[in-house]
Length: 268
Image 1 (tube, one colour):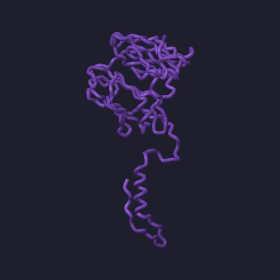
Image 2: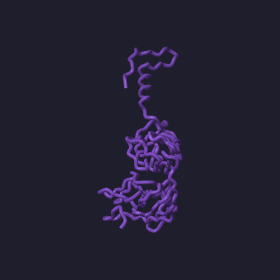
Image 3: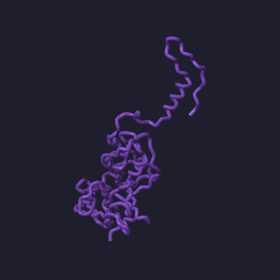
Image 4: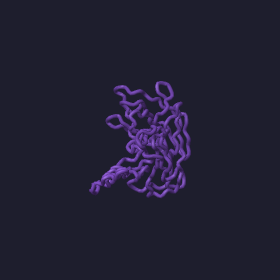
């Protein structure tokens, strides 16, 4: 930031209000230009949840160009770190980086998107706006580089101590689920959030010769991962198969466990 130009002092004339020196005006304008955008202080508290207003590609779009950069635009300025932690993408795809253009989050793949594949993008409800207000609910959309969106569905119920568990994160992961040395499981597949009655539906699941494992947990620290040593949850390996495109599997159950010393992130 450059200093304002110095100008001679101006003395006020009798009967007229004093005129502020140009240097003061320029300095004030420069400081205002450096301020972080946001509503003026002292106004009403922001309690309105942010929303997603636009995505690229659009939800349900097919024949998407494999060189496309994924975009998610929000209705207001966001807490960028919380959004980046809440962002997940399936199918597995290496990203060059996550970066921002105003209210738009951009996810740039390292390589071109796979041909004839469906991609599922999700921003969990832990994403917050500039004032710390969370999304009212998780947001997701799907698109395909081929001519059709995968339509497999898995549905069921999550409980804890025999009671329905609302607000739990559910992942549907192809194959085995691996926890690291600290018992932490990273995002590994299609996702949903349970309703108040513990019910979940995971859509856009592709057919596979490999069984899907289920992960359910309460993301208490909002880091987008299942920390089995400190968070209520559980993993059910090889819980379901989606053998043909559009297959639907219901009646799945996940009984989460409250963590105890010696527990790990896998079922017996």
